[in-house]
Image (tube, rainbow, N blue to C red):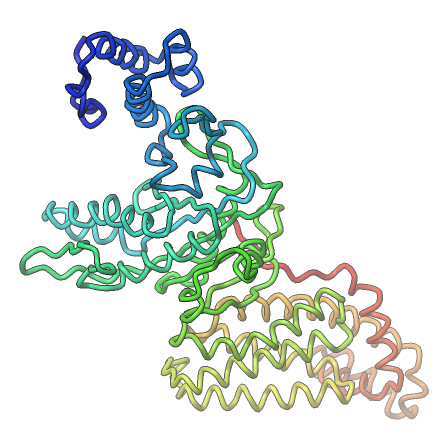
Length: 502
């Protein structure tokens, strides 16, 4: 039989065999591998068990195993103990007699593995715009297939183009995968397209490639969310779904900028000194706890990578966000959640002013809008402390609604403020209902007969009544008691969890 040209590299060195019997054995084993009779190293080893182990046989097995990897290992075809020692130890059941060989851990739980999923923003538009210039599309294609592989190899990570503009990365440590993602981002954000000291220049004469932004999700590091390798060398399992969900979340939060989101387990592994982290990674990044995100019934504590120095100002939000997370966890709806949410809104507005954002909103100057928001922040807090809960919560809603009109506001922060707003609307509705019931009972204590008659007349006219009723509620002396009873009754049922549709 003839050996296909696809296997040319595997056949290199065939003439090195001086022994005709060894050449014949090599050809026979090649044929069985190609025909699907020998797909694993253990089956290959069994097929030659009757032969004496000699240098020639070892060389023969080495070459046949290379063919097996190419045909049956799929995503992992390049994993060898020499090229990817860490991944080899993690993914392969190594043979003790032939250290170069082994079998993939197929359909077995492989814990403590890390997977990244990347999406290249603007890829589809780029391909559409360059549909008449196939050399430019081919240029981007080679960048994804060849250059990304080279970048990942430097970190001991393997990569695979999943579909279109999606790229899968797998590594044996959290820092290896994160480092690869950051290097890929740097590469696609540099129009010159040079990486490190290696030759990865992808410039065509007279062409300028656009800068591509990337969204990424990284998952792994858990013993109970394993990776599964299928028979065709593909991957499946919760870790793949989790990375995809995080990437989708990153894309939603930041559709036009680089964004990396991590699970809490990945974050914890990165912060451990014994994981062999690359110190240079942490010189340019920090982390932001974005809280719990619900993905179709699966809740994840998610961290956002903060790129320094361009996003360093976001770190001012870390402490107020941690305060809010604690308050929400303890269900402190009586006052703490409200105060923490106001603080976050205030810091977010101040950061917008510091950054000099120039959003135009409803024809108003952006600086004027921000200063007005800070005034609303002060008045809302003052009203809440004075037990004017209804007015305070309505003012808080005004703040959140106005923030939602600002394009440059941190989208993750805005989502939290909106969720808190929705929950306080529920509380306020029940609170005012109870106040009105109390007003009806104590109307004779609140008003004189003449004032009561006037009140009842106004009640017939709804608009005027609402205004008078709001001031009448404030005449009740037990407002705080009613507010506390409502938060006790409903607080445990309130939840603030960011939702993702994927």
